Structure formats: structure tokens, C-alpha cells
Length: 408
Image (cartoon, rainbow, N blue to C red; front, top):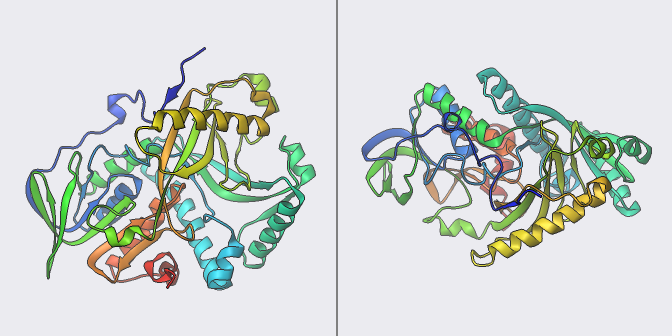
């Protein structure tokens, strides 16, 4: 039996050196109109967007590009917002909720299109998504959700229990949506970093920012070996960095857990659902299932508050066993198969599940991309919104992703 790799992301382990670009640490002094803190997907896609628009930009990553939440994610580009449309509609009204969902869908579609246009080799595979319910009460609620989406002009097709059975999925009903995709998340990040560099962005790794000093006419980023002076700083670190403690109360730090199976035998593949789809159940927290090109299953869920370092190994073993048991309820034929990888995905979540993207009134000359959630779509959405804010051309829907929606 193969040994289980605990705590290691399959996307990062064993990468050939040629597929993992290296950038120097920052030293000395530098001036640029825009400096970005954070070298995950949100940071590098934002660097690409600004550089492609002709804006000189510098990016600082504390460790290695794509080595944080991006390289540990499930690799899903989701075209739906986190949470239910009905909840968003109740909070902000139908028109604004439609704007939120349509902006997210456009970002997902354009993200995939940009990957193709730039020739980034990251195993991009388009996919539909199926959000399914099992018990009768949840099925009725999900059907009302589908009706609300269709009434607002948001993509949603209803699948009956019979349709789910034909897909080898046990459930009372489901919503099927289009425009999603699966990718190798690290390779997508590395590809956008290369594209940003080709357009003039300057990227540094192993360069943690120790202090952010807001001056009257500029911002200074102080590292161990130098200082960058910029007109605008973009914080794309997932959750607020040190120096932004006042923002931390708006986020809950969590961990999602993930398992990846070995390549599954043909008998299991024939009995399993979802080869061309991304599956999500209605559990709280939800589980997601996706297939990789080499016939493995990635299964995520079992969210909890971020664990302390000392108990981490025990938590990974426990969550891995829990996830494989829960996966066997969806794919009974997988029972007895051990995962090849078990790992955690750090996340910072907001009160309503939507990211905070844009300016904050208490931080002049700052732009933020925080709480982007489990989907990679938030990175592309953030890059667009941030560029529009920088150029003074925000869209009407941008305000609903901003800090103005904070509960008072």
C-alpha cells in the first residue's frame, strides 16, 4: 500500500524545476506607481492586468510564488458566487444580487479565456457544476433557489432525482450551471507570473514586507533589505497582513481539508458520478468533488477553525479519514481505497462569503483583495476590480464586493 502524504499539496510536490520559475529577493531601493503584496494567484493576475494596461508594477512575495493558498487549493474556477442567490437577494436586492452573480460568471469565463489566449499549460478543463440536495426539505429549498436564479436571469437548470440517478448520483434534485473549469492551480499562477514579467512587471520572492508606511504623498514598503516607494499599494494576501489589524475582525480564518485518491480502477470509475462535472453537496460546510485528467478524485470539506501547529498532524489524519468516509457515501465503490494526499487549505472568510475587493476609507493609497474564498475565480475578479479602481472607472457592481457593505 502506498504511503499517504500528509500536509503536502499534490500540485507542489515533485514539480520539475523548469515549471517553477524563480525570482530574486528584493534588495536596495525602487520606485513604481503600484506595488503588490502577495504572490498567490490574485497577486500575479493583478500584476499581469496592471502591466498589460501599461502601468509599472512591482510584486513582493514573502516566500515562493504560489506556495500558499493558491498551491494548496482544489484548482477550481467556479462561475457561481459562494452561498445562495436567495441570501444575496435578501441582503442587497435582486438587481444587485444579479450583478454580483453575473460579474462572477464573467470573471470565470474570461479567466479561462485568458489562460487559453496566453497559452498557459495548466491542464485547463471546462466543466459544468452540479449543486445537489439529498433530503426532501433541502431539495425543496434548492428548487426555490433555482427558481429565484432563473427569475433573475442567472444561469440555473433544474435536475430531477431521475436525472441525478442517470448520472450515478443519489439525490432529490440539483442545480446545474455552466462556465466552470478545473486547472492545475500552481501552473496557472506560474503562467500568469511569466506573462506579467513579459509585460514589464518586476517580481521578487523571499521578500516579506516588514512595515507599510503611509506618507502624505506615497507609501513605503520596508523589507529586510530595502524599501519600495509607490503611489498605490495592493494587498493581495488573502487575509489582512500585519499592520492591518483593524481589518482582522471582519474575517474568520478557517481551514478546508482535501484528499486526492490514487488513479482509480475502471470498475470504480464506471460506478462514480461527475467525470465531466464539479459536484457540490448541501452539507454545512459543503463538500466538493472533481476529477483530475489522470482519473483521480479530489474531495474537499471538513472545514474548521484554523488549527494550531502542535496538533496539526493529528488533525490531518483525522480529517483525512473523515473525508474518505464521506466520499464513500457519494461513491460507495471507493470504500477501502486510501488517499494518496491529505492536506489543508487556509482561507479567510467574510461575514457573507463574498470577498472584499477595492479601497477602504481608512487606508488612502491602498487597494485590497481579501477573503477570496475557495474558488480561483476571485483572483481574476479582483484583478479587474482593482484595475478599474486605480484608473477611476469602477463598475456599478464593484461596490457590492467592497468594504461599504460591512454590517454597521
